[in-house]
Image (cartoon, rainbow, N blue to C red; front, top):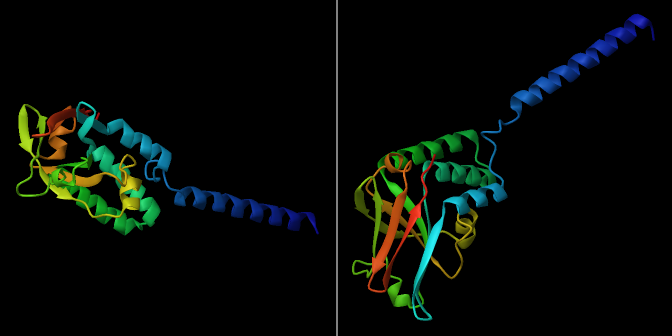
Amino acid sequence: MTMRLMTVVLLSLAFVSCTSTQLDEQNAPSQDTAPETPEKYNKLIERFARGDSEYTGFYNNFEYKAILLSSVVREASLKRQGDYYQWDREKQLVEREKVQKELAEETRVFMSFFTPDRNNDNLTNAKSIWKIYIDAGGRRYEGKVKRLRNLLAELQSLYPFHTRWTTPYEVSFPVATTAIETQEVVYTITGPLGTRAVTFPAVK
């Protein structure tokens, strides 16, 4: 092989290598759009979740753990779902737009609830023995409760504290999440079996 031919070959290989590197860098997802790892996601949920229980002596009247579905939590949940469902970009955009609309219209809380008497696990009934409120910005809002029918595996992937022995509920309140999430929000569940309140931390 002549010196001139060897030089041409080496230059061609260098060009291909450089071009390949540039394409890899362009196609690589940025750190901001990469999906959360399960470990990081679980730590975030634990950071924002709060729970409490009510006892009469040794008898457990009820207990719950809940999380305010703030913009931070919803964004992390979208990344988590997009990861295991392998959403394409179009699906991600549709889901993100849907979440942004919900955040601007109402506030939602996921709650994992337990009471030993099944008759008292009636949060969605018209004659429910329970009332749920949030207090934020000097105002109180009453919640509307919906029982979730998702499979256990899906619920636990989004809310690791949920168990097969607790009932999944979503509670919605008539105030925009974006209007209250930057301050502490007090979440209260109350009824004849007792009253328990927790404080959700502000999103900063």
